[in-house]
Length: 492
Image (cartoon, rainbow, N blue to C red; front, side, top):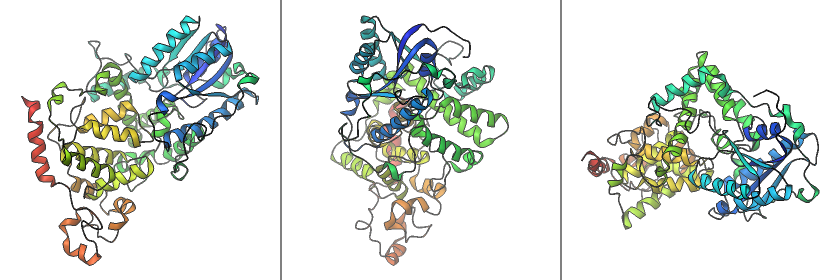
């Protein structure tokens, strides 16, 4: 990383996307080393924005993170005229137009392996080539990508455990992969923006969006927000393995949105977890495994883009999912947290109110949708994609197919989460349920997991099922039997 090189280009443009930080940023680092002058830009891509609701926490998070990134770039450059050029329009066209306006010889950006992003980047590469400009892309969002971790036969892994072993072996053999890029060492190449390109970052209103409740969620934004959460989690990391499954406990890192938009460096996170795990920190070892799962799902998406539309295991496409008016009503009840199963409904209230859902609960509600309600996993996947502030196509698709048993290394189809026992095990006192379903707060820890089984306590608390809280929309035991019959097709 640190070998001195002569600049290859007179000027270059860094296209920020899902990597909204200035420190340890691969494309920025390479641009600074290869160019005498470097400009930086972000495009609010209308091809993406037009599909979003007018109140979208992700857009607001990006907007706030760009202000932090702009300040970072100015501080690195040591001049107020430096900073971020922000455009609003079709991403491919805008970045090509900006490269022309600035007269650069190359555009630098980091890989995005989502199918739509790959297609977009191919268009940009062609458009820039027609203008005599290069598009240079780099790995930044994961530790190992694409073909970097393969089986001995040269194919991608479809099972996590051997993938993890290969991942850890590669990381241990070569520390380079967890090392940070020393961006500040080369920051002198950051150029002042031309006077014609010093417009302020557009407001949310200018972009056609409205403010959300993001400021109340304590996630922070930009690198400062990510740094604060990382420092908080480091003090708790050793307990991650014991606490991560309990939604009423501060167990997770809460860094998922920062990982999604690159306001933290995956290299720094993985390096810290790796080093601590090597020193016997059991919590760090479990968290590192979760970061490796993230890499695993990204390489699955890259090698098998068909998973966006179909099951990873083709035989699962033969399942006949529930359809019709009852199925649609069940889906609506699931979305709105009206299933009659308190842990499921509290989890859906959490995602609807905050854009976040605890990871254990993501598995619980996904299992409920697919195996209690018999609905296609794609319906739940699409709802999560709409609601989650940390939505990531690879992880979301992987998680939903895992729950539906149709994905790589998924849970067996006959393993069906019991929403009551999951509630009793992971929210034993009902603290999480009571936070999001205050209408049940008077119930005891024994009754709150399945209120319909405690009619006398409901009566004494003045709670009427069907009025104050729904009765269960399905019977779990009956739904389990129907699911086993539905999944029988995969054994033929």
